[in-house]
Image (cartoon, rainbow, N blue to C red; front, side, top):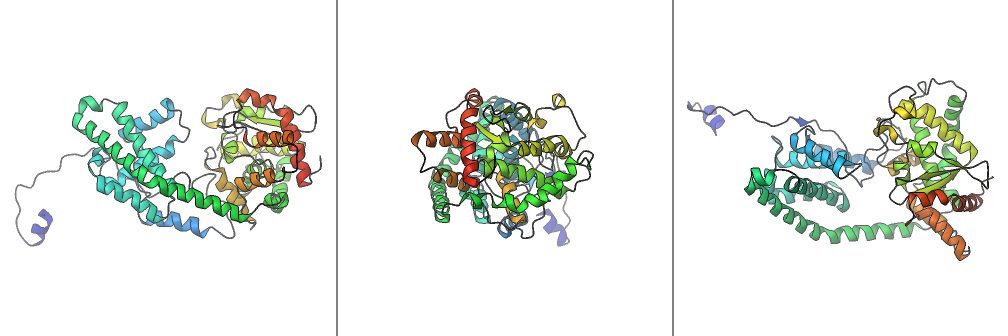
Length: 430
């Protein structure tokens, strides 16, 4: 109003001075995806593919152009305390992603300052979640945003002094949580329909042969072995003479071995640790093989590697991984908690979404995309002629739904037997 009056030549007196604001400058528009979207960050975006994903790229560009990646600084007190709560109290491994979700939401609600006052803006909040959906995010991903905001508020209402410092705002926050509950209930059916549609699409794809499942490994093997040859011959010191594309090829190829050849969930790749690699055991029944047990994955897992594959994994561990970490060779005992993950991206972080890496490898070699679910279904279907006992072993190898970590170390004999079956199915030589 003051600017309008001045522009018309009017003299305005008694203009109040602006009080200093505690707002933290907004972070520039950085394209980081939310969970459950195929374009989310994993091992870096520099791996060049001849045919980029138009859908994934357009989604990121659309989100960025609409300003939905803009966020308040993660150093704001509200977000710092929330991050510590998620990391230390909740042991949430992906806490940074959840904090970023909230930071984006807070920026949309008030670009000038991050605060809890958004709880008094129900209509604008509903508009934000609707806009995310209109931009192309899946219903499940929008639900993830809602859950992040909801957890943010539950932390501030239940784990801070808010109820003593501002009872009115505390009550408004509790009412807002109920408001989010209503939105979640309204969209839960849409999420169910989306999940059902995806399952139907998967069913329509049909069951692949074992050759089709591992086609990308065959297509990339020549290039992969060329890079391994450099490492094995000691041409790199250590790995520093490799290009980023070559480093990522080694990473993606090994991830694909675990997910496609051994039919493991992407989470096994994401949670595998250095300690678990070092603790691998020789197969008693087949001395040329080793058994790797991943304990931290929520369902746990074991998979069996050949002597050649073990050499590949070890070269990655000793030569490529230190470069990914941005450090020279380092002793394992010096690794901190962040460095404990076995698979590390080129951005110096643990792998967040192995499915994305797998998809990039397929695009690079222009091979039809095969997901972990498609691979697992192919192997499960191939067991229909087996005895019930053998089927149970295969099911246990693929799912491990009720086993503890210790039990999985005792399962290496079963794992070895199932691995032999899978290799025979693929026509691999012992």
